[in-house]
Amino acid sequence: MDNKEMKIAIDQIPVPKDKVFDAINKGLNKTDYRGKARKKVLAVTMVAAALLGITFTSGFFNPTLNRVLANTPLIGGIFQQFNDETGVELANQNAVTQLNQAITSSGVTVKLTSAYFDGNVVSITGFVDKDVEKGHNEKGEVSFDVNFGHNEGDNDPWLNGKTTSIKKADNGYNFQWKLEYPYKTLKENSTLPITIHNINGIKGEWNFEIPIQQEKNHTFVINQEQEYPEDEVKVRIKEILSAKASSTLIYETVQKYKRDDIRITKAIDEKGKVYRFGNGTSIKESKEEDGYHSTTRTEMNKLKSDINSLTFYLQINVEIPR
Image (tube, rainbow, N blue to C red; front, side):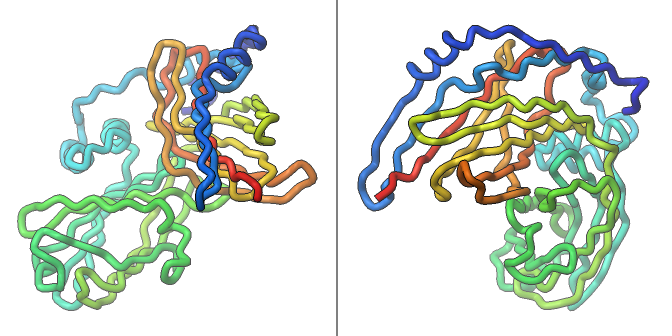
């Protein structure tokens, strides 16, 4: 999407802060655990005093995509098989890179079939033939010992948040890896090396290099902050990045105790649509005078084109000092 296709209008929305703070206070549900965990849980039912204070205009996002698979029935069908709505939408936009990389090692053939990079998520689909059943796993089970980006073992940052889906196919199995982009700076175009060490215990050498690319994300700078003085916690919604079929939230937390666990569980727009979030990738951590700062990037559903505001819901697990 270029500048000619985009129009962003940012409006300051007046919000009755006193009423919002009152609603927050009434919504706090506190449970105090004083056992070994020494934690208390705050279920924050309403948050963000000024909300976003922005308006998204209909010219910013593409119109609602036709769910018909159009010119890409094969690759779109793979994403349907894995219930991947982002993949289906990207297939409709011809924004999925189709691959045809196949390697046979130790009698087992692995073929990579597609890749996409949208927002914070990289998806790779592939196929492994039925000879994988000669390995140690039960029939119907497929497991990969794999690393990405020339990393080794469990220290591979691409493995944090990685999910694998497997579906039986003719003469083998289709699979999808979904990875959270692990680095601070999002690169629009790069090559991702993939090394499979063994499959179902069958050792071999399956080495691939695949292109991952996306158009530049469009950014809403928000910088709205909410403070919880009782628990010495601050949360700042920094920005939302919009990709072709998904969005990405970047937020910062400031806390007195390093082991406090603060996460955004969902957001709801003024029309009642619920937006869910992924596990999140920590892209910056520091100790400063006012506490421990942590900046997180997390995938979220694509924003609707005609919303005015979002309310964010937090869960705060606060360490009780000894």
